[in-house]
Length: 113
Length: 115
Image (cartoon, rainbow over all chains, first blue to last red; front, top):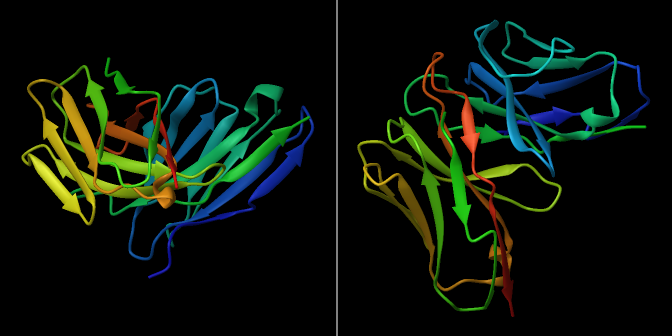
């Protein structure tokens, strides 16, 4: 069974630009969550999508948005990039019900210059 | 507000030692607790998931315990190996919302096992 995949693995952008990250969950999983990891703040929850609907949301500005498609693949978009958005962005996949064990992808390393 | 703390922040041991990593949480009304490992610059690997009704879970050389009443979980690693070197994170779902998907992570314990 294939694991969680994220593309691209690395991105370099400049301030003011926007970026889209992609996550493909484990086959059969309907929930995709996104996390931001930085050395200063650790792992912070961004949002979760379940069956194409945003079900949970963290405390991030509106520049961070996401969506989920009918095949459960999810995208995350960050607009008007700031230097502080440089981070490892991780997505997690789970069934969304039951024991809710979450499985993480390898992450996308975003660097904003 | 749920806060998760991990002690120690870093640990260095020689190969073969048994060791214990600690995780504390402030709100005992948790649905489950999950332990992960993270290699430098990589994603998280799920190690063990303990449901709130369980006291222990075992996988190979790993054993995790959960004591909800005291707000603590421990991860026991037997006969440590250099390949165990990584950062270990515990996480609990935040109450509220739906589906218990919003995880709150501890700050992690960075483990180094020397040959």
